[in-house]
Length: 131
Length: 142
Image 1 (tube, each protein chain N blue to C red):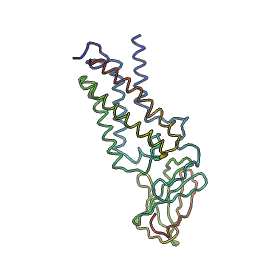
Image 2 (cartoon, each protein chain N blue to C red):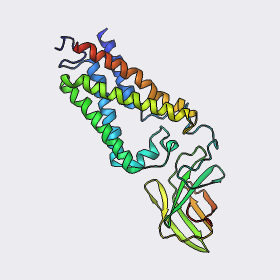
Image 3 (cartoon, helix red, strand yellow):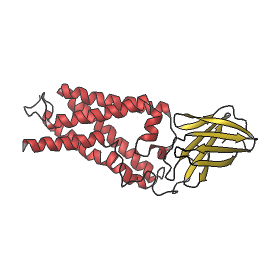
Image 4 (tube, rainbow over the protein chains, first blue to last red):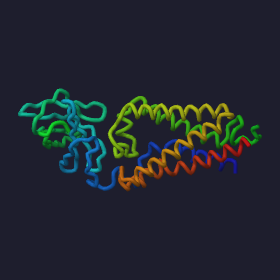
């Protein structure tokens, strides 16, 4: 009886310890693929195949948030932007790709290379200004 | 004052103390992760945090400080049983309010209905166990 109580305590304590960190196979991160097409960072959302890129332009800083079909964030291998024929590298900072001193009065093409070599490219229209 | 049963608020190792110790460890790890690398925590934690909105590193660190405090209080109460009821009550109270926020945000559509399933094992089910733990510890100090 006593050992049963210890086992039960270990199970309860182990569950309380681990519950925030476990990945639950039965629960999708954001439901089915492509159910959610809202811009989460106040920018513009583009869809390229099974992937998404959200572009945010504020104060000449461009942020690109890359995510998969279920909007799970992805860290790409590399990224760049093309503005008026000029290409500028994006660098990964924390949780998104970033470029400073971006001057845009029209279209910006964002190009991303994922870890598996997949190349994503889409164009955003910033002719109305920031974001 | 404390009763002689070793399960709750008296010195010595017991099944309840084991639960509190593991709970303390989980809170400390989660809090330390938030404080050390908020962006990694935001992207990696399986609970679908980005569904709730953009990352604010400062607020994640604020939350990390709270989790470290809760873990520390629970850990402290493992060795100082007179603090056990207060520590468990505080953590249980926080988790109940936290769950209410999740219910409201899911009901109002901030996140999709899939979050009922995502949040059940990580947010809602632990409430049942924490309330049981609180009642168990309280019964030991009466």
